[in-house]
Length: 288
Image (cartoon, rainbow, N blue to C red):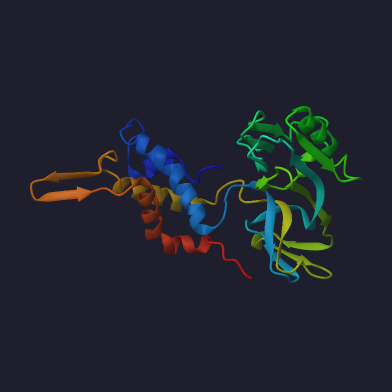
């Protein structure tokens, strides 16, 4: 995720000469830390980002997306479809799990983990880079590992793209247990988007009631608004001033005078709290 200000802007705001690098390390730490803490506090990601995952639907003709302004609404799917069942039959294993998650590269990875026995270990399979990118290919690759993984692809879904599989935390899959994998299903049509509010309305009917549904969309700012950038600059500058003492010191005592430093995380959170009133206009409020 991109930062909300830069080291150069902070130094200019603080009146620090560009050639003065004495505070550069501290500012380099604080700019990303403050940017993330501002986003956490506001409940939004400000830079233009593609979002893909589950959104809570309380059930009505209105759905609020977690991030806004929305630049493109790609799809909203009202249901999930079971497409794969995976089971491990290693007789000497003490456990086996299946997980679907993003890697650091943003590729979707299928993790196959076996605990104990001759087949112990973790085998990650890149579902995004896989060719051909189909569920049938998943079965071929997993069973070719020769570690007693058995894959059943639901009939009629063999050619569906593998990188459509929904995220899944580690799920037990050692026989007699198996793990079910799903893809988003049943696209919703006739939707009206209010871009600046991140609000989607149905023309007919309603969104599913009290359940998570799948949404894919892009939201945020290509260029961070000047007033938000200035606010981020002010907050970082304040944090720099509050951290003038050596951050490696936990405490110091000179005669009757003593001080104890807070940790770095507390510094960023406390500084954000000082500017909470100014941040309020950027804060996301959920309804429902």
